[in-house]
Amino acid sequence: MRNVDCTSLEIPVPNLRIMLHYYNSIEHLFETVTMVTGAERERAIEDIARANAWFGGRFSVDHRSDYMQRRLLVEALMYKEFSEKHAAPPTASPVFFYIRPNLSIESIRQGLKEREKLGEKSTRWLLVDLGAIHDRRLISFTVRDSHRSYRRALMEAGFDTPPTDQASPDDGHVFHIDELAEVYSRHQEEDDLSFEVQVWDWRILERCRLFQA
Image (cartoon, rainbow, N blue to C red; front, side, top):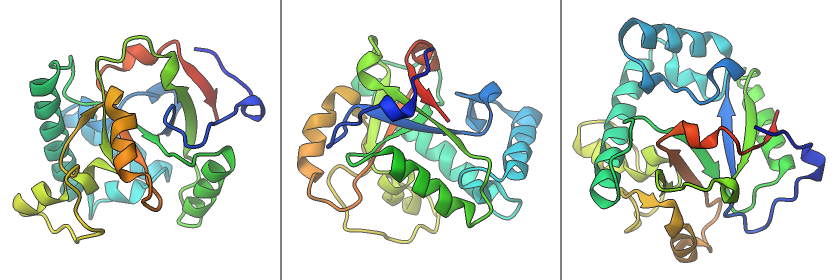
């Protein structure tokens, strides 16, 4: 992986290429709690809760069980649809990124400052150039956060999921990353638009990191 000074990084607007990833430690850069099971998962959850990292409150004792059930369901639904449409990934748990059409270095830093007010002070981030990934067969995305996209399925499963904005025909679906421009064209006038990206094989990321903070 190569690092590039962020001051030299130009992010196009609208951005459909630079992916943002949040992480807690370089040792677990592309690892997620759903990649492990049993006692190892419990230890990982405890580590995240103690780290005061990005949205770490969902792993607090009061919320972790509900959150993990939601997350496992959403990941299973995305895996099933992606496998049926394209190919079965080697793992059932993806690494998550965000693509934000109006992304800037300043907006990343401002977002972290806002989260710091809630005690989340250890979050780190990196940027990956989607165009530098040669094998993109195992990359998908949802319109906005996948939990938000799949909120109808979560409600049908019995979870209390308050409505947010008006439902879209693209909700509850996972798309191949090569469909991003087409899907963006249907949503480009929406406020605070973002896409959650799911990389189903983290090994394709080994040589394409742009900037780590």
